Image (cartoon, rainbow, N blue to C red; front, side):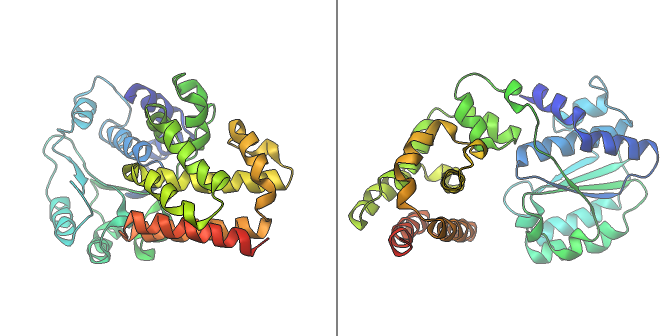
Length: 317
């Protein structure tokens, strides 16, 4: 997989742009990478670190080997687990003032900055704005709007694009469904393709849309989905995509649907959902996803969502 990510990152427009900026001496010292695909953005950040250390990508260089074996003394990756804490930020500020040991630069990768405590982000402001000449910061985020405006304003923001011709990087097993769900993000595509229960998760989620007829069924559907609690983000992505495709179907835009293999099931219930209902349900899904981000109980969230979908479905007829 790393070989595939390596090739994709190096051929991306974003990486080529940064290569040119480095050669011209114009690369920013604080960079914020934006992508829903955190696996891809993290790999991008590590490969960018190699570029900074060597001013080129050299697979055989000591810097490259140390970066990808997680043993480079001048590359610091935060947080080590969970969210970035105030103590982590204090460590970063202190470490950034210490001279490099092995290379001529120090690089800090801070993953999922949007999940860190506000106080931890505030501690970094001055250091991000005025880094020392040999210090670089590479931050990643899945949701730019959740990053403090003061952090955003101090970084050069780079949105990592989706992968074109992503299917050529995919194994045959689970390829069709994995591609549809991934929406051009290679990390998601490869993860979904390797999941043995992907079809089961998808069909259990699709059943909510196609088979939910009464409040008596809510417990049955929520209990079934509870078995996949570790993949709750995927469940909500599937549910959101189903209603997105249902809206395309109602508007006669089948060519835009990503779940073309499920078109028969969606056609069978298309009349049960008005456009108004679908729009309201999509709002409910987004609200439920936000509740999960606040660590609300998954069973409660999914049960309430299913009940609300049923209610909206009949109120908007």
